[in-house]
Image (tube, rainbow, N blue to C red; front, side, top):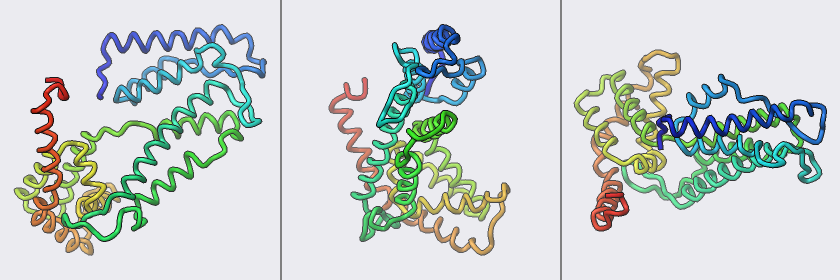
Length: 289
């Protein structure tokens, strides 16, 4: 859910930040005490960055809980985990992010193991996992760099960097924004290769007619939909909209394939949308109406 930083939310943030900074102030005389760890104050610039970079309530809640891990009784203490020393508040923060990232990676793996990708709406023989494609390799790379690490051996500065890396990868993806951005990329790539504008806009509207979650599933499953992003990245590789002559026939072919097959590609997704609407109309309380 997108955040509107109203008075209620700002007061909540201010209360948590004030408690955080107040505890730091109380502990400042114990800087040489090796049994505790004192973080930097949460200053105005940090508060500004929080509001500018946090776009939904779930991410804000996690960041505020991170601050509260320090303000909890004993949160500043250095504890022993598997024979290694680590500040309790950082250990709790790291565990929160690692658990979230692990759940998300596991969900992506289950999807890949159960889903056969499609080409022009037709299912292929092997699942996404069996094809060992880029998505599978990305999951393995994230697991290796984020989870399969011995962070307990990290220095204080390395631990801070690791926490930042976890936080960045734990951010909630706004599927609605992603869907709109993709639809815009669909237009821009087509313009560069002089694809008929009327057909492009009709295709774009069909993509936007899906729910954000349906589009996300479509992008992960349908090969021709994914290929548009590849060509868009190639076009913008040098920071300018330049058509690559050696790719033109491939790009035009993909767009023509989408124009011809988009209704077949979206058939299952439109059926899911109709089913969801039937459930809501039959049980209006599920949609809050």
